[in-house]
Image (cartoon, rainbow, N blue to C red; front, side, top):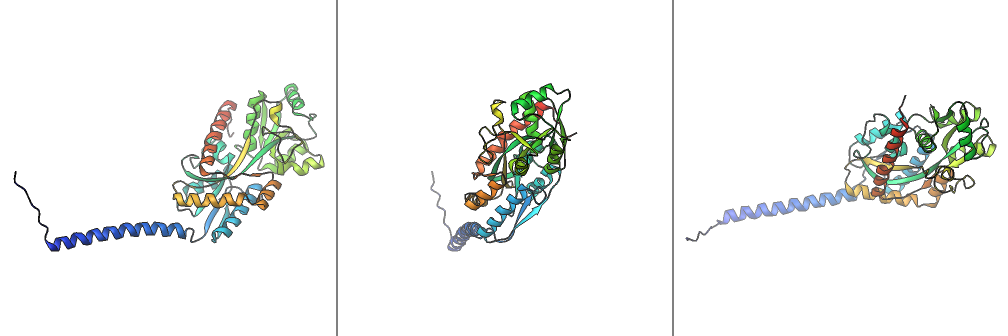
Length: 336
């Protein structure tokens, strides 16, 4: 077999050498650009969407985190309140934002694990977001007003069983956390209750105190002043153990075995943001949540600071979503 020899002329050698060098420079340039972007981010203001109106615990927590992120990252972090539709409008804006790390926002149990299984929302809670970190956890408390005779959960259940009409309970609106906790409580006790949605927790609590409603679930920060004044009575907390912020109130699971509802707030970004941004944001937020002043401030709001990894938050969305999806189906809940 004849041996074929390929002779490359000097001009061609020089041309190939130039191409190889240029390719190497391009590769190094791309790597340098990526490293530079990691170093430079963030280089302008970050938008922080809060899917509820100003003034409540969600807003206060968001502004505290935003202010501390601004200090640590040396760029403005601008809070924007976009309320409506049980928080789903604001969360939908997070999902639709550009995935460059310059839009983040707060989501909670209601917007990520309840409302999506109750009504049509403009986002997919599992696929449209990048989880960053948990922010807080919180218990709900079953409270009654002076209209009810019960001073314990066992007495409350007996009173509900013997009532000729279904007892009424209030909430901050259809699909809200306290609405769904009430549904789960009804399922667990096999009691029928009449849900009455309000435009926020404060008017619902006023209705309980005024005798227009029989009971409701609310957070510790919302009810504490009324417990101290005697206008409300707390019969049980939704966590498995007594809440450190309300240690004298027994867990509901003492009377209703297995009952356990812990709400959460978390920080999210649009899907598919760069991994280095996810990591940096998560690390910054977890540092904030270990700050003693932050822990104490959240505690006064009835919230427990809860730093976590993005993976832990993603698993929480999945596991709680499965629980609430079943509870909604079992309770035959609608928004009507």
